[in-house]
Image (cartoon, rainbow, N blue to C red; front, side):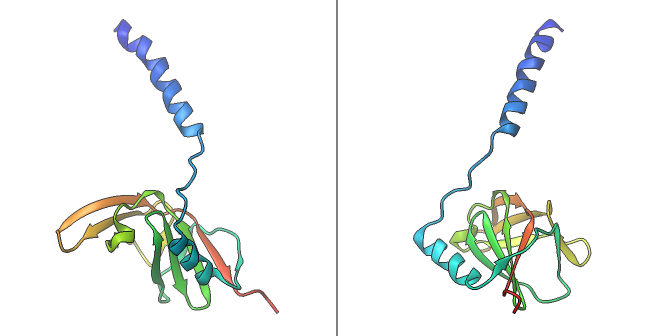
Length: 136
């Protein structure tokens, strides 16, 4: 029993250190940054939301494996996922299980390679930051 008691504080310290470290998102390529700039051009960021409604059509645009845009009318929702949906920016298909009529922070998304018939990555959705045209 003694080895467990010694290892437990070390394990807890490692977990605390890992959770306190702030991970920096990977840099976007010039092409990805250009697509993001074009999509958000002339729009102003709003307050992050934990969910978006799927009752209106929301088109998905993949910027990178960890950055998604949902376009709903004149609003574009930026979502920085937790983890990396590996393979998404290389043509993978995003598969989400939706419970109800909303996508929400924490929902799990998987990336499927439909040609190979396999899952290549998974991630959890983050907050949805709305970008809208400025009020006149």
